[in-house]
Image (cartoon, rainbow, N blue to C red; front, top):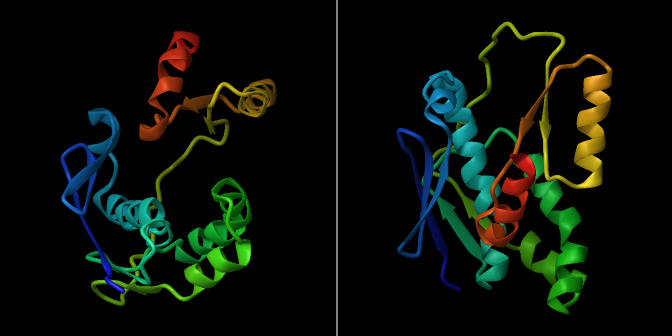
Length: 176
């Protein structure tokens, strides 16, 4: 089987992942990305590249994926998340969970080096602050409300999913 090559780089505004001749970009507002400490950005970069691409051997039916990045710090958690998602993926795809699991477990994953970058950046944070990922669904709205009621000063974070842009126009109306 042919291997998949994942090439990635940090840009002035975030991350660019190159795969099979296409570029996939994750962008952050300038005031966020440029102010984020370089060492922390490097750790985030390795983790984002892996998290956004580890499913590709399954979708492209190949047994190997090669990264030009080091292994991510949170690799075990992303791996477990993928394994736990396989039953619902199998259901949607109309295939066997066992077959997907077997394919995933037999996938060879290679990195450019073996050294993992560890997050070591420490910065003073406000104890009364929290970040809530908002989808405008009942769970995220409830989480935001509970954090607010507890005095945790919740800061909303909304992620635009490139494959779900049809949802974005409706959610942006809600956000305004």
